[in-house]
View 1 (cartoon, helix red, strand yellow):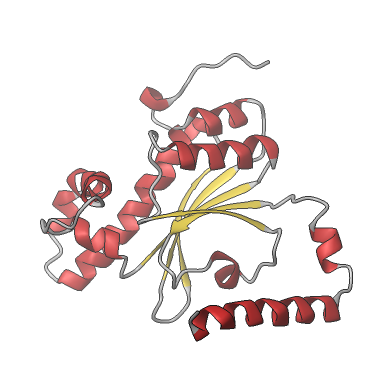
View 2 (tube, helix red, strand yellow; view 1 turned 180 degrees about the horizontal axis):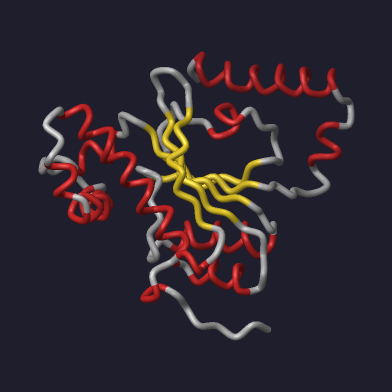
Length: 214
């Protein structure tokens, strides 16, 4: 068994000791349930840990991560997390957080075949198709890449607002806000893209769903 693997177990023991030294009832209280105010939809990149970035504790952030922080209406994993977060946990905020230098977004800018992930990346390519005029006008490749990351987040935020899960919550008067962020691995700071939705009134009519309130 590798030393790295053994170290993980040792780190766990140290972490438990640190937490219980500060609060002997920490795990007892944590085991009684969760009421996180935030659902985080982020990239699976190992350098983008939700709790550390936001300075939050266990129990404060419900997390879903995938390649390039995508919100796909055919992804039952994401939809199940969203449904539980909104309808059971009653989160008040959902943050879609991308990050500069995202490998998935970078792959979507090119045409190299990678493997199974090509099918996922095609959904990111759709974002490029929606915004190709603005993106192709940017001559600097780094700036274009960064802007593509931002636009991908903008589109995923809107895709969240389009879901029946979110619109049902709004129609029932639930206090729920969706936000878009981009994280910089180079300096650790978050950029708020100021794309926020708190009501389906902000959606184009074609996406608004008419529902009965029960």
